[in-house]
Each structure stands twice: as C-alpha cells, then as structure tokens.
Image 1 (cartoon, rainbow, N blue to C red):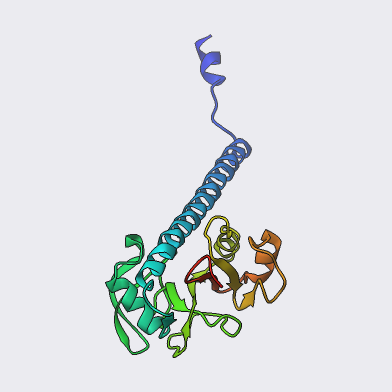
Image 2 (image 1 turned 135 degrees about the vertical axis):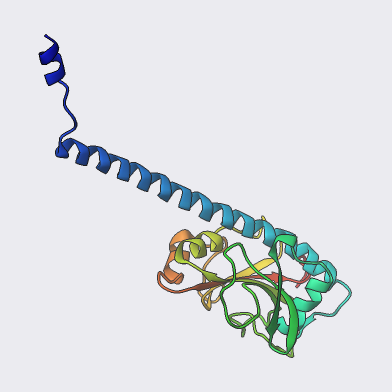
Length: 218
C-alpha cells in the first residue's frame, strides 16, 4: 500500500506546465495592459486639469493688456514669473527657447524636445493664420493657445476630445498637427473618430487648444 501511494504521486508533465505558464503569461499581459491604460488616462486627466487652471491664470496675467504678444520666448517666461502655470508643469531645468533662457513647462508626458521650449506651451495665437505655437511672433493677439507636444497616438486622441466650450469657456478651436476644427468644419468637442484620423500613429503629436483672452467678447 505504501509503494502504491508513493507511485501515484507524479509531477506536472511538460504539456501541463506549458498550459499553466501560458495562462500566467496571458494574465500578466492583461494586467500590464490595464495598468498602461490607467496610467495614460491619469495623465490625460492631469493635462485637462492643468489646462483648466492655466486658462484663468493667463487671463488674469494679461487682464490689463491689449493682447498677448511675443510668442513663446516672451510669453512663457512672463507666465512663469507671474506664477500663472500649474506647479506640476514647472521644470527646474533651465532651457533656452529662442532668445530667452529660463525655466519652461512640461506636460504629464515629459519633455524630450530639443528646442528648449518645453512640452507644455502657451503662446499668442493669430487666429486664421497660426497652426501651432511660434517661438517668436511680433503680433499682438486677443487669442492664446495652450499646446501639448510629444504626444503618442492614444494620448493625442484622448486629450483632443477631452475638452468642450461648456467645460472651459472661450474655447474657440482645436488643432491637431496643424489640422484645425473650425477650418475643417468640425464641431467642438471633437469626435473621437476625427481626432484619431488627425493623430499620427507613428511619431509625436501636437495638440493646441485656442482660447479667447476675454471669454465673453468678440
């Protein structure tokens, strides 16, 4: 009886081990994918909050002026000095954007651009002729752009469809890689299918939200 009881005990066969390991791999893969999606949505939510905070601060900082002038190399240092940008966007690294040197801002996705202007940008916006934030712009405009650069395909589409005029008054246009909603006859908030068509699956993407300096006029 003792011999039979011992003999009946056997290890896993290779087939059984393969099935178990395969199941574990699928489970780990699913958990990893879920965590990646959750992290992406968290960063998009943070970016939306940064935009909401920035809108009022920019309007307050330029409230007594006729408009916003100078492009990023003038606007960004001014807003940093005025403490108009969310604390989580401020970089402690000194960068050079055009002819200006100072601390610029980064979005939730970090900053790998080599132009020194950061990945979270605010600029004057010449509505009708501008398609992205310029480093230097001599015009004085009553519109400003809030720009995120270096976005992958997923965050690009999610962020571009995450804001509406009702949520952030004064939102007049959205640009994705130079494609404007107003110029293309698209309504805001953008439909997900539109955003997905404008966001590049390979390479980095740029999304701009265009706001009136004074939300209830012109």
